[in-house]
Image 1 (cartoon, rainbow, N blue to C red):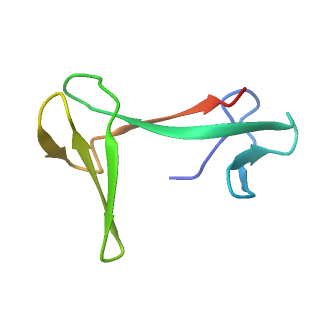
Image 2 (image 1 turned 45 degrees about the horizontal axis):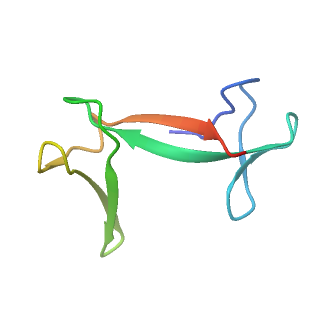
Length: 73
């Protein structure tokens, strides 16, 4: 999945954070649970990323996770 600016649909750059060159805005990538819509915790191990939902108390498949980019103020 490409990181795309939610305002202008331009591909986001990475400068330590997601950044839209056209809008000049930084974004935070947030993953949401497909079952309860709670914010997920990203677990990184052995080069693979997994997502854990603290509300459902279980791992969630990366393919089912809803990703959104939120503007950093």
